[in-house]
Amino acid sequence: GTYEKEHTLTLARAVRDHLAKRTDLEVVLTRETDTPLTLPERVAFANRVRADLFVSLHLNSTEGIIAQGVESYFLADSASDEEAAAVAARENLAPEMDDPLLAAQQASVDRIVASMVLRGAHLLAGPWATALQHAMVRQTGLHNRGVKSARFGVLRGLEMPGVVLEMGFASNPAEMEHVLEADYEAALSRAIEAALVQMEQTLAGR
Image (cartoon, rainbow, N blue to C red):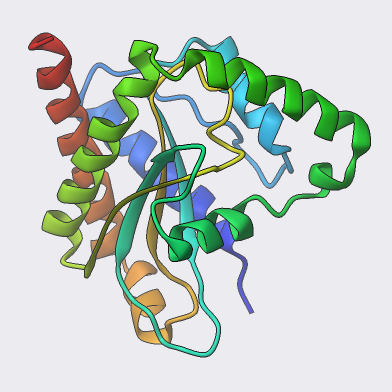
């Protein structure tokens, strides 16, 4: 009876407010209200505001089995395993994928991305995903499902390190109950703050 998009927006706002109070970072959300954005529009927005880092917040789901835990993904042409490929396939389901014009535009983006793989932004996507994953496990106490890679539409074409963060399973009633608690909201905010600190240290050491 609830929608992922509503919970992810609530959590994103909580993270933004937390970081605004505790850091001097400027946090920009791709959407402030329940406004639909295509995957390419989200990428274009992040590039337009010249973001330094990008994270796409999601709640995971499975059919037939009760899964649990948090996992982080960065972009790769081939998935790290079959499960990663399945998650990417679910997250890539969007109306624009059936639009021939947008599909052609995305194919063009894919060619550009292929030529950018060795650029620093994409080399840092793995460390960004790792920092987020470790911080999420420490702060939330959720099961560690690891860092994986797959071909996510919301990450293709980004000019900065980008990560898809699966914050827990909406298909798991017990875990979803935990995700909706204020304690989880605070833990998520602390985790992202800790990951940002780690990335700052990583960048400073380069």
